[in-house]
Amino acid sequence: MGMSVTTAAASAQDAEHILKLQYLCYQQEAELYGDYTIEPLTQTLDDLKAEIGRGHCLVARLGDEVVASVRGSVDAAGTARIAKLIVHPRLRHHGLGGRLLDAIEAHFAAESEAKRFQLFTGHRSEGNLRLYRSRGYAAVSAEEIGPRLKLVTLEKPAGLDAYAASA
Image (tube, rainbow, N blue to C red; front, side, top):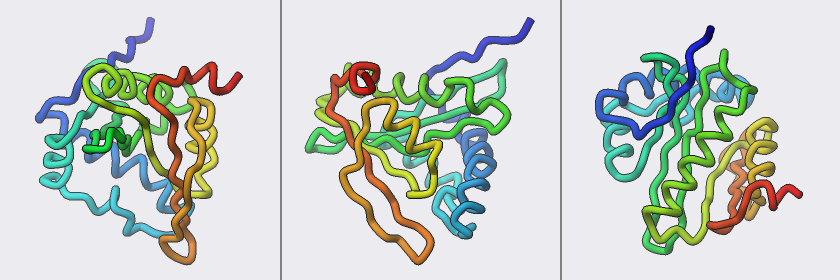
């Protein structure tokens, strides 16, 4: 019988585990875009701790192992900016990313004045784009970062039911 994946707010002790998982997870993105200098691969532990301190971070654990994470914060205009949704490669395609996305949205909807949710991903990251669209997000802008990368910003209003949006 397998263990269950549990989700909870990250603690300060999780930062190193999150950073290692982030480095593992973003290797595929770096390869896709031919750029190993992307911010998730160069972020320091101190920067990550500061980022977690400024917002909210969730982790998913399989036993004691951190296997997924997401973080974000809400700005003064009520935009909940969700970032770095990561799932260990061996656990992808089992709904864990969607569960974490739903959980952080629920947190921001209940604990803040979030009026909208916003996130971004690379234009070639089809799996990410598919997940976000299935949860009601729509592209609102695209910014060319370099010759190989265009960041697509997606957004949805707070309170929009993901399944109603895809129906």
